[in-house]
Image (tube, rainbow, N blue to C red):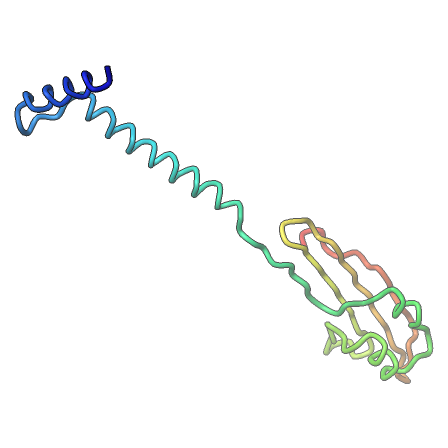
Amino acid sequence: MRAYYEREAAIALAQRPVGTISAETIQVVTMRKSLIILLTAFTLLSLSGCVFRASISQGNIVEQEDLDQLAVGMTQNQVRFLLGTPMLADPFHADRWDYVYYLKVGRQGTAAKRWVSVIFDDSGLVSEIRKDQALAPEL
């Protein structure tokens, strides 16, 4: 049975004038092109969501155990040894050091924000410690 249909198809192709294309052939080619376009579009759209975003860490990492050791009456050298060099050293207020830390993990929201200010008196000793100050919400 199969051989009969193959022979009939071969006879039909041989009888067709050269240079003419059947409607079925045009339809198959069109369907293949549209399928390729759809698959390409689907692949591009699905891969566009796979972009890696690195974590962004800015500022001084201020650990809670380091903050617990920070005390009024410490010298500037002791504070620098404990917390490191301040992120913000205001030239107009040399007696204030600000330690700011910000961490944003990939596509997630902000994982950590911390702002600590250490204020010194005229003799260079810690007079006030401001912990966990509010950072701007758009950070």
